[in-house]
Length: 514
Ligand code: SF4
Image 1 (cartoon, rainbow, N blue to C red):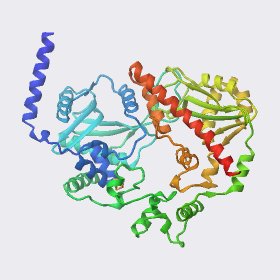
Image 2 (image 1 turned 135 degrees about the horizontal axis):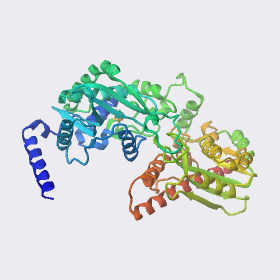
Image 3 (image 1 turned 45 degrees about the vertical axis):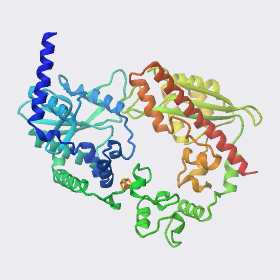
Image 4 (image 1 turned 45 degrees about the horizontal axis):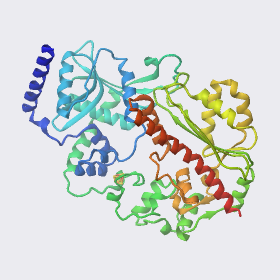
């Protein structure tokens, strides 16, 4: 105990001394890796983030990999470089650099390292010492199957920071995920990752990274919003939309279905709203329907096509929806990275037009592979007559196909019922029905309010992506009993709403035919 006390005392005082003699580290105007990436993606977004001193606004769009999943990927990667030390729970940037420096001196792998010099700072998944020289390798891991241009620029920035700090960088390694890997008995760390040595490719990006840094500091010191439509992919879905485009109302050109560069061109030429698009503009059929609806303010209904679609629907009706998880590092044996494994289903059943609506559900409790259980339940609940109504048949079919491949005892049942699947998204994806409220989208969440007036606003979980991330967290992180109970309740409510939405959409389609 006295030794531990002395060690802590020494460390704390040394840290204070270090801070005092490195005044630049007291600066709060660091360019961090997140800010660098944010600026790379959209200069305006980074400027807004700096002005508001709000980290969240740097990440103006939601990303698919949750922090708990990313932590798990890093933990698995660390097994390739054992014997290292993790820089964890530092109270400040300065402290994390201090702790990293301490471990660097020991020449051991440093996990979750932090380096900074002058105004530049970066986190690193791993820093590993060279065996033959005093140099180091930067190691990064991404929840992707291959690397992108953005990754090279990000790694060039990391190399710049590490070299400024005084490290000699021998190699820059990016590990991506081998999506062909099949998890049998134990995760084989050497097989699940693909190692990419990028040092040569990064040299070509190095100058670009320096220029981005210089431009970043010029831009953030500007007092006015640096309007730059060129770097704006689209304001739709961006949390800064109201700052950049304060006057943009519904029905604007950025809502144009698959508009991409056309939306930008129209906006730049002064055409802000869909209804004002000149008639000579070349548009697809769906875009034309959308523009027409904006002009009239009415829905578009191709009644004969909807009638043809509804003709195939026969009782009993099974409204089915799965929620899945698809982590990069599979949780269940006999699955691959990114494979969607169903962990939950909701099933509304209507045996005949007059019969009451019944509801059945399943939600995994523990980390046991749920696929066999799900098949067992569904085999009991879904008969070989009638129709199974889903929204996006490809996804639901794939979940069941892959599960049945693993448990061939359900093959007979699956062969009988799979032909009964009806994809209720088709009339919307083909624009046989379109309502301006949909804003160019044909997803369940866009169609439901347009057709029925119902929505997901009162729920805690609003979409499949959120459900996926929340349930992964449930399975992999420590949570109190109460937190787990609440999360399960939210998951149940969300999935139930998905199939209830299918019931209501079908009712509304049938009403259109009366
Ligand atoms: S609205 Fe466009 S320009 Fe503004 S922050 Fe978002 S992406 Fe960038």
